[in-house]
Amino acid sequence: MEEEKLVELAKLALRDELFAVKIYSMAAGLSKTGSTRDRLLKISRMEEEHADFWRKLLRRRGIDPSEVSVGFLKTSLYAVFLRLFGLALTFRLMESGERDAVELYSRMLGSPELKEDEKNALKKILEDELVHEQELAEEESRFMKMLDHIRDAVLGMNDGLVEILSVTMGLVGAYGSAFHVALSGLATIPLILHESSYPILEYVGGVSRREQDPR
Image (cartoon, rainbow, N blue to C red):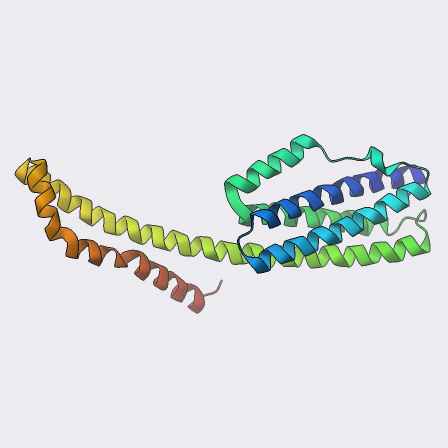
């Protein structure tokens, strides 16, 4: 790998690491779970250390690393995506980015232009990226399970509402009076209490199914 090619790849790596620092920090700020927030902040700090490695590598070759910056549009798009779709899907995107980094760094390790100390440092960074990929997969899995639970509860609530609305529509057809419908609504209180158990039953049932068949 020629020196010029190495420099271009180092710039790309630095840009990706700087981007990762921003996104992980942003995700940590939005996380409501302490353990997830701490993990994301830890990854963000490690990515900053990786960025320092690429800065030093570029300076060694007479390149000013301050010339490398993260695109505002890309960061803004990820910020919007993070707020709209939450952490689970963002983790999936970042996990893909970690895989790309692993592939890039593995290729660069074979460059004869790298100094011995640079190769050793890059090996450590490569190990970090593999760990990050695994950690993101774990966080994504945890959030997807949470989304499954929410889905079960919503489906149960939907079943309950269908029955309650059916009773209400029947009363409207029978009496045609808002007063009588409201008055007779008192009789549906036991039904409402019964139907309110649907989300709980669906949630518990979903958890049990996933415990029996974790695939």
